Image: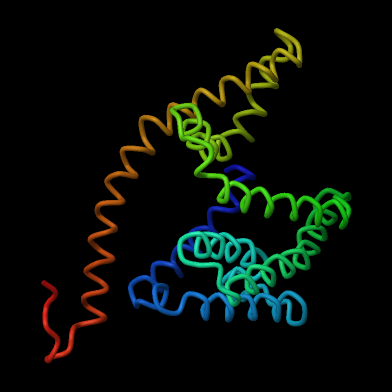
Length: 233
């Protein structure tokens, strides 16, 4: 349907694993150990084995990026422990190595690819921006504008490509390419904001409440108190 939808499959696989880890309690109790195993599988598959099945099942090509996000949140929410910092450094280094997979894909599909140096530089900037945003979050107050800008990014990502092509191609003969492109940007921003405001936010509130209850129920099921345990006051 749309070129940008390729990432949705990976996101579903990732959140499927996270859901399983939450239900079993492993995410809460063995998060760093799980990430270590995940990074080891990613490095082994991408640098030595090259299995397509493992790449999809364990997200070995993009797993280090997901792991870095989890680790940054963990470090910010808990502590800057040495194991967590070492895992974050390992995730970054492995992600730099797996960029060659993306580079080969670009060469195969387009006949040209971004240079390795530029890919690594962009990766470093992306990681630095994520860490910087977390470190500075208390110095930049949230506002209606910043919340809206953040909220519309994912709808914009999903909508911009094919709809953008159609809109620009249809409008260019009438108003010229620059006005068509600018108008398309404005239109996509507005539609993305409207989806975030009228669809995403209400559904998020419902899902947050429902999933919270489901996860709590799962914890109770997998971790029943022992017979001698006393309920909390």
